[in-house]
Image 1 (cartoon, one colour):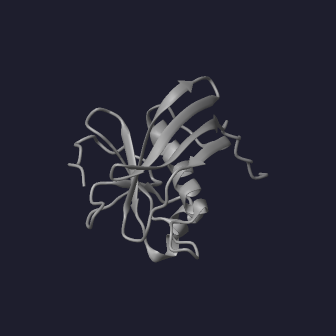
Image 2: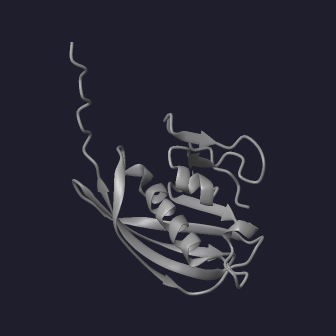
Image 3: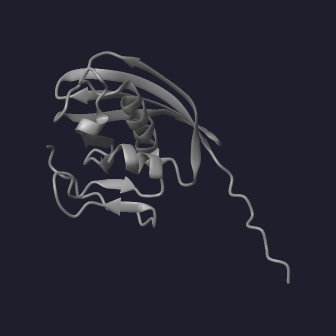
Length: 159
């Protein structure tokens, strides 16, 4: 595993930092029940400012052939889009476009990691691309677009 960076964790109520285990010091969001169910997926900010996300393949991530299910790859890549966008995303957002190429299979016990970059960040849209690896093996390439969501005013109770 890579040496942990000393980058400070953003102060966010929806961000959990692991305090023990293989991913000690890594971060995950706790607001998404789907990702919590299919993960856990983790991310951290590297010393160079880049973002790395990772998870350890468990039996629950496998398809009937004993390989990581393609849907798990896609869910992790989508999680990684938001992790990669950490430096330019300061509000809620949704994925509006996602494309990927499946290149190789991973098996139980492997460490899967994603890295990537923001290709462009505009007023409401963020364009990103990344790659998913297990060691030196390229498993998946992906790209996506995230749309920033405007905060809706909270309804006021009638007085």
